[in-house]
Image (cartoon, rainbow, N blue to C red; front, side, top):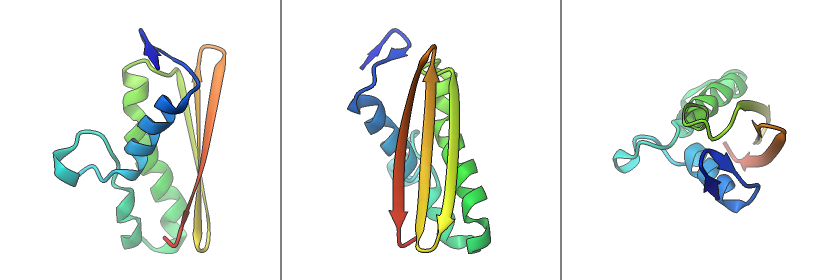
Amino acid sequence: VLEGNDFEQDKNLETLVLCAIFTDSNWYGQSIGSNLSAIVEQEPDNYEQFANSTISDALQFLLTLQIIDELEVTCVWQEPVLSITCKFTKGTTTTQYDYEWQGV
């Protein structure tokens, strides 16, 4: 739930984050989304760097719109799982979401 530029720690922010990360930005002309699906075109040694950069870019709008003050993305590749951690801070409130993408 957004009130002004503040967010509550609920499923609304997480839904927004999920859409931004796991929706292809080229899909159906959407302005929200990432190009994370292109990770399969990378060498496995580059998965972490590619995912971190791609996800950070996809979530940048949260900073631009001042929905959050800080964003930290960490990606770890341990075949066959890409672990994704997204940490958001607004004021003194920190929210973290963890995802695992299997079979990359």
